[in-house]
Image 1 (cartoon, rainbow, N blue to C red):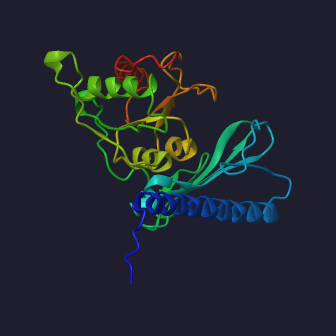
Image 2: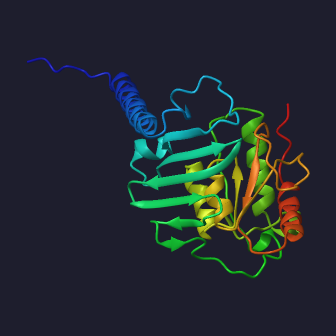
Length: 263
């Protein structure tokens, strides 16, 4: 019998596409389940989901925001930093947040004015010192490379990371270290829990962070008032039990390292 040669490159690309298609189908199925349950309980509420998003704006009406699989690349690789994220905004303000990691069976939850909890028992933050961080040199910072790997975004991100980690002798901040979890939602709840000192990304899970005593600051061009404009491209999330002025100073030190991402 003649040996049949296999086109391994084509087979590999097929298998990769199959895996990604599977994730998409799981995404859609989980979102469909979430939407159905919300509509059963709160038929008048709106819903904005990652899979069904069509440019809807958050209004004053109660609006649920869901991401069925946050950390898709992790999910594909079996890396256990994956979460389902569900939040409720009322009058444009996050008032309920729930983030669940099914791999580690960890559930973070919060309602405005009622505190934030891990697995509904442990009040956040769990770890972390109440002593204010004097500088970025003491901070463990969560960052992500994001989807864009092309110029100008990637070189600017890499330059920012270099400024944060480089030795002070060459003008860097020499932060304690950087961490990339691959999931925005989990980065945020790790700040809320006290495992990370701050996180730089686009916002999600803000209610959990704020109920744990953390703060959310607007982007590099914002006035650092603590108010977040949804149109800002980036925010800093901070868990640090200190005065607002000290927190602003800390965030300003961080943004001094951030490259300008405007074209």
